[in-house]
Amino acid sequence: MRHVRSFAVVLLAIVLTAHGSIAQVPAKDPSARLREVLPADVAQRVLARIAAARARQLPAEALENRALKFAAKGVDPSNIERSVNEQAARMEVARAALANGRALAPAGDEIEAGAEAIRKGVDGAAVSLLATRAPSGRSLAVPLFVIGALTDHGLSSSEALQRVLARLAKHAADSDLESMPGELPAQALAGQANRPGSTGRDFGQSHRPASAGRPATAGPPAGVPGNAGAKSNPGRSHRPPPKK
Image (cartoon, rainbow, N blue to C red; front, side, top):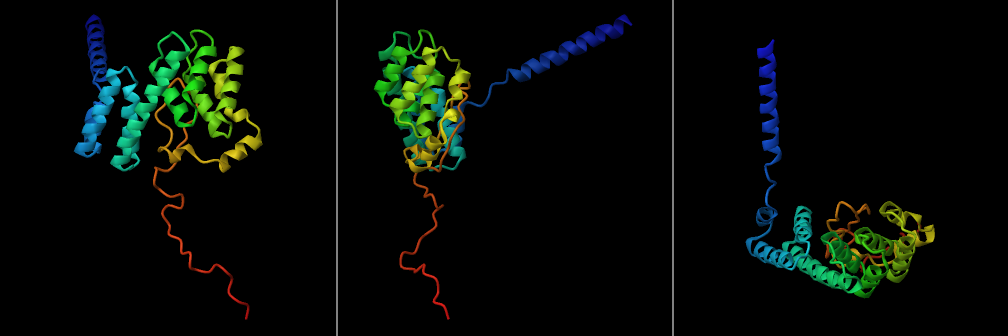
């Protein structure tokens, strides 16, 4: 019986060791994946832009994920390169705006969220104001994403900012902030259909930090017409045939 028990212990140790070894196998390097899905020249420039962002302490992983996501959607490589460049530039603006609003260095997810808010039309001054007035030590990632979501639902960026600041003044939890877009009246939600979509400037919602619970929104890639490319014939009459 003692030998059987010893064998069981040894077998369990082997299984646990093997499981641990499998868990430690690293995922494929995003750089290698980008080289696989993008033309060589585009991949080289995109990777150089990502490396420059990483050297400047920007959330480079978000740029990698952005490029990989759009490649998986079949977006033209030149548009992927443009999107990465534009998002990296927005990250620079967001980091500077956050740093101007408070002494605490902005975290990567805050910079990413600030870049997304700027992509949706929120200016750097509003980002700085949020950083200035938010409770000390509070992460601004979710508040910034919620401001962007509120503008998606038809509010102006200034009104969205004031609503989020009012909730923060009451020490609202992230989950409370995330519920704000769904609390808007039907008129505001209906107005969303009548305002230009932010996806015209980009390809939709970028990768979000896992801490931000805002639902992702996405639109067609830039340059893809809303009618899926169907051609219209302006010379064709749409009048009903004459009655016989």
